[in-house]
Each structure stands twice: as C-alpha cells, then as structure tokens.
Image (cartoon, rainbow, N blue to C red):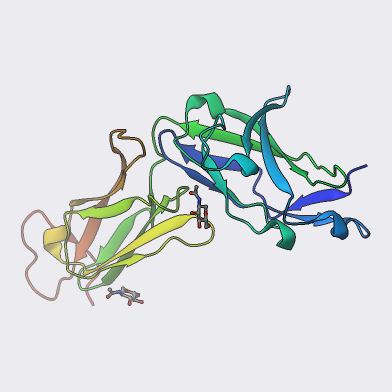
Length: 236
Ligand SMILES: *[C@@H]1O[C@H](CO)[C@@H](O)[C@H](O)[C@H]1NC(C)=O
Ligand SMILES: *[C@@H]1O[C@H](CO)[C@@H](O)[C@H](O)[C@H]1NC(C)=O
C-alpha cells in the first residue's frame, strides 16, 4: 500500500492546445512515511490506462521528456504542482502522478482528466442580461479561464462604453476578470456589448480568441421626453 493521497487537485482540468497548464497538486502521506520524502524524490506524470510516462521532474530542461514541463511545487512540503507546456491533443487523456524516492519506492497514482481543447472556452458575463432604467450604474464582470499562468488571456470590451475598466489578475482558481462600469443611458438601448478573451500561445502558434456578448435593454424614464425608438419604463 502506498499511503500517499492527493489533495487539492481538481479532477478535471481545462486547457488550450499550444499553451501551458498549471496543475495544482499536493498530497498527504501516511504516518511513518514522511522520512522517505527527501530532495532526491522525483515526480512522474503518466498518461492513459497503460501508464505511459510523459514527464519526469528529474529530466526538467533536458528535452528528454515527452512533454516539457516544470514541477514547481516543493515536494518536501508535499506539493506536486506541475506546469506542462505546449499541449497537444495527445494529452487528451487521463493522468496519474507518482513519486519516486531513492531509498524506498513510495508511490501514489491518482487520476486527473485532462482535455486540451483546440479553442478556448467562452468567457462568462455577469450579469448575463442587462435590463435597467436609464441612469442606473451598471457593473459588468467578464471572467475567462487562465490555465497557463505565464500566458493569461487579455480581455477587451467592445464597445468600450466608458473608461472605467478594471482588470483583475489571475486568481488561484485560474480565472482572469475584467469589470466594465457605465451609467445606462437611452443611447445604450439595443447595444451589443462583447467581452473578448485573446489567448497567446507557445512555440509560435497563432493566437486564439473567444467572445461572449449581451444586448443591453435600457428603459427610458417618463421624466423627460423619450427619444423615439426607446422603451418607456415606469414614471419615477
Ligand atoms: C522551473 O520553475 C522554477 C521556479 O518555479 C524556476 O526557477 C525554473 O527556472 C523553472 N525551470 C524551467 C526549466 O523552466
Ligand atoms: C465598478 O463598480 C464597482 C461596483 O459599483 C466598484 O466596486 C468598482 O470600484 C468600480 N470600478 C471602477 C474602475 O470604477
């Protein structure tokens, strides 16, 4: 029995082909096994049911691994976080991780389903619909997956509507966010607002982008004459 148990690792990891993925990983050890964890331990990622080895942390930077990567976690602190680079559909599989130490071979296999896709998933807009009275302050939040820490997507709003755009960095759950604030006016009624996520990729691969949009509905107050074509809301 290996006595090694993974923690904090999502079972499904979404990633973009031609880019990298950061796989958050840590583990616990059964009591009495901690002394096996030395600086000489190496982490190995294997692919598929047959367990083909694709990455060995002791070969980092040598070019000898099938998948180039970097085990950035401190294994002596039971972290096995790994970055895998220049993903291809070859990796569209499930993965297991094992730890090999010099003295005694202690290992754990745990499963990770992994799907590098050809196109990035669409960003999400929150709220998903905007249906407001004119004069209302609207705060739109666009969030996009950022699986590769060194190449997060850039988010852009079309049209810009205001100068009040705030970009938030990649959070631990690998999401990047942009907030667009504007004051709703009747001129915005029927306007389509888009958030585009542009992903740069590795090894000279072309950029990829994905887009989500919504159409703004602004109700016009009766307090002044509404422009023709606008939608009349309740009198205030
Ligand atoms: C691996 O990551 C560490 C820090 O996380 C960095 O110092 C090192 O240069 C990286 N190695 C390679 C080959 O990318
Ligand atoms: C946008 O609006 C939110 C909520 O009203 C506020 O917390 C945030 O500071 C605003 N951001 C900018 C850049 O004005």
